[in-house]
Image (cartoon, rainbow, N blue to C red; front, side, top):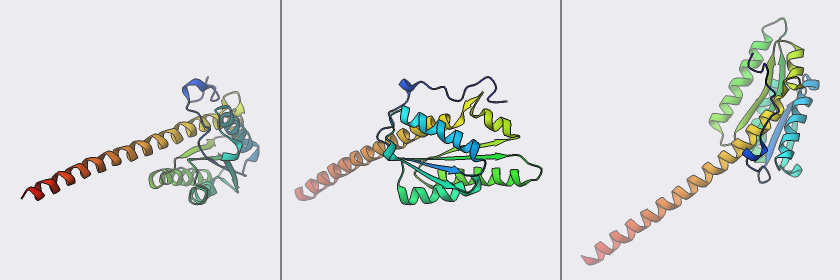
Amino acid sequence: MATANKDLSNYDKNKIPSAKDFRFGILVSEWNHHITEGLFSGAITALLDCGALQEKIIRWNVPGSFELVYGAKKMIETQKPDVVIVIGSVIKGETQHFDFVCDGVTQGIKDLNVLSDVPVIFCVLTDNNEQQSIDRSGGIHGNKGTEAAIAAIKMAFLRHQASFSYQFHNSKMIEEHQFLLEESVKEIEKL
């Protein structure tokens, strides 16, 4: 088991960028709310601990985990967050419904990450039983919501760095292109 003997809530705040300048979107599934509220609590606590401002955190609820994909898409389009965390809990039952929901949500979040410029952090527990979910939402293994918040801060920072690097690179290219254009004009004037 990947989380055996691990506390998902451990992080070194000194190794994490400040979250104060970022806008966070959080979508929370209402299904298995006793689990998802624990995950949300871990996420919001970590964000605030790392400097996020309450007024820059947007929370939307959706009925179930399957609806997280649509909710994240709409949040990205309308709220302009730097990063989105999707929080859900799917607990295996007696039918294949578990497999279809888990696959759909996983693929949907992957698609959003490929198609959008805004990172979407996957915080959807897909456990075999309720106790496993409790253990990972504030129980003996800590809180997967905390881990998702730290990932969100790091990805928002990465997005910001990549954007700055791209802007710097493009302005440098424009300057070089402008220089070449000016040199060409001088050569033409000599003729």
